[in-house]
Image (tube, rainbow, N blue to C red; front, top):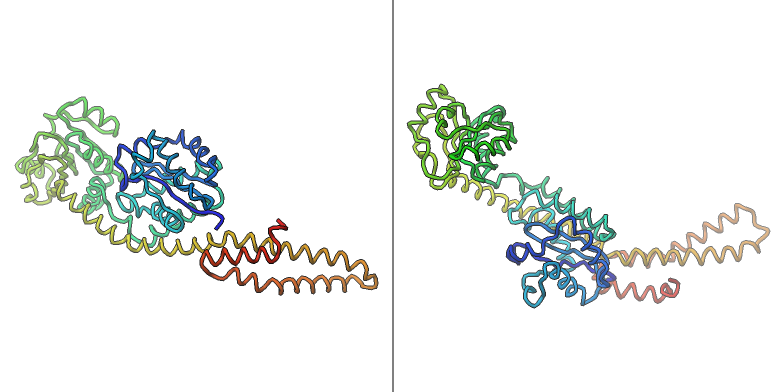
Length: 424
């Protein structure tokens, strides 16, 4: 085969974060680095993928044994590393395995969290950079665009991305099961921890109308409230504002802040309208006994983590269907790839035969002065049909499925028999 697909890279499975971060490539440097890769004699085309979980070079190369070692050395050099000390962190793939990997990455079957949507957007953006830099040629265009369509098919035909797998999104799902709608609901965030902030942002994204932020350090509450378009609440006045909240998210340090007696008071003021407590703090901010109160619903971090794990398990089960789709599409792509040498040969063969036909007609027809235009047209049609019949069997033979080795031998024999190398 005149060209080969290879991948050289590191991922969260092969290299620790301290190695991946040294090899990470910013968008501003990507185009320059791609030009370095395709300038190598061992590389025809290249696409560079760089995310928090992977840095990979997907390349189309001549069948050169030096291609993978050269790409490995060049990739490690990005971070000032070398093969002797970090070669074990680098994985390599070639041929069908390389195609399968691109399709699996695009479909988020190779991600740390199966089904996460970010990787596809990153791949599209970074492929666009490669295309703009003219580093991605016709083969990698086909590989990546096919990968994008595979990702779309996996998402539409499976539930691999269908269930929430973050604490914040699971909290939104659980709240949605309690309230008819989250639109117009009020949220109180107690503490400004990262997970609590993420939950508050998730509630705002689905239509929560009001956000209150209470924190021991009032300045921090003001800062976060301003960034979320909410209202800061002095910590000591939090009980006054609790009855206004439909959802209360706890992510403060210092242990229990709200007990069941407080919640009973709140429920009386709310006329027993439902309220949802999400306790993301360790030690817990909310008294577990709150769950015993009618229309008060409490989930702690363990409850939400259990739901996340259950959803992840469902995604993993669905990924089996995704893998089957990938295999089907790899087979389809590989049949095309193996024919890359066949198509140019068939074109050359037909061009050669057509040129001979036209030369003989040009030499013969002027001598047949007694022929009218209709007869000349019939002779032209007859010679076209004759060429088609002569080429039918070799054309059909080349289009039949066979191993790459058998196909290479057949192509070489045909080119030699018809003198196509001399013609070229």
